[in-house]
Length: 129
Image (cartoon, rainbow, N blue to C red):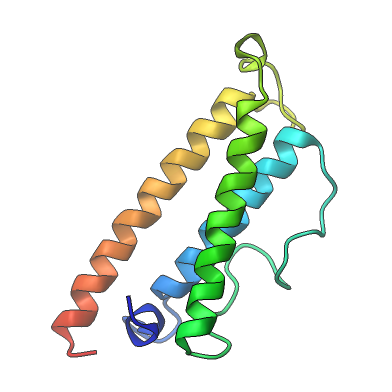
């Protein structure tokens, strides 16, 4: 994926692929915090949820944000591997949400945004972006 494709917006005020990449990384971080009880404030980028991207539309900047996504995914997976099966239906650090629900929610969240990314790619190619 090129930086231009990742930065393309279907309209003013709409998210681009790049922002969805960072958004997915952020929510993996949130899930990790809720699984582990870690404190807020350790996400590598300033902001939360949807963080405006790109700061610089370069291949290096895109690669750095993709590495961030991979890192947050690996961090979450490492925490998930440490959960005993008997603890999956117990609460996470978020009241009323089990560890199982948190992990399956992250998977559903990723699938939802992966679909959005595929749609954005088609729309961008159709607009000669």
